[in-house]
Image (cartoon, rainbow, N blue to C red; front, side, top):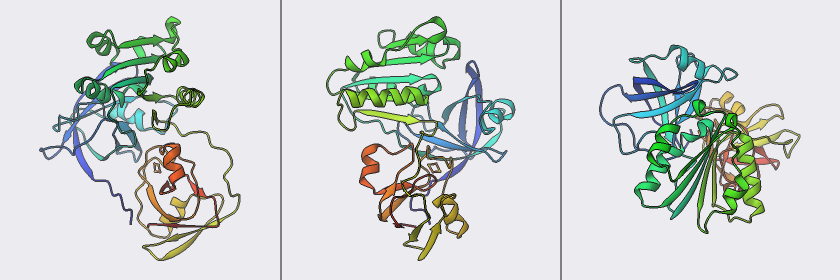
Length: 321
Ligand code: FES
């Protein structure tokens, strides 16, 4: 049994509106009334859509409002059909099952923040910006996108915080100079960055070049990171401590697939190492971490792993399953 079960609940779509080209903002309220579970800035939920697709969306509303959640959904025609379903078929009044919230992008206390958003990556940063402003911290937001019309919440952000928000529209020839932004960050700044892989990869490289300490740069990826060949080309064993089974994981299958096939219940969602749902404690053995959720420090700690993509870097892993 998974040791981090996530609650799921039924919600009803109480509002949907367009907030940018190809982006709809959904408001979801508990179907049975009452309060929704608590959450913190950076958290996401899984939408379990009637077409069988599960997709993760960052909560972008106010955590203090327990009556409803909001998520902004970008239509991705090359996706797995989740966003297409939401855009084409999910109407006000429809019921939906959701799971979570889960937070792998936790907002930490600091006196200054630099927020960097690329496109729909603005969504988890919105509640962080509110929290930073509420806490009296100083902050700035660099928000880059294809065009202003494609960038959700751009008018509100610029209207409410003209001093702190800088918008970069590539259509208008405006370019975000991440190197200058990072070099200008005052000591002790925490940087929260969310957007496409190339933005996050550039941020990682720059932070390393500047010698930033672990924990200064926080990122959330919507797309799986590029990973090279696994450490082990061969099969390996996985011992499940609670279930008392030892299973063999062949090179072409994931630990998650093998464990599920053996009848062990493990929660999962994205199955590509981006959502954190399948996080599993490691009892012993060296892990070949291949996920896009854990920080390099968390991966080095070797205490948990995402079994949908991560593998063994040794002959046998023992897991708390
Ligand atoms: S199922 Fe999403 S990280 Fe494994």
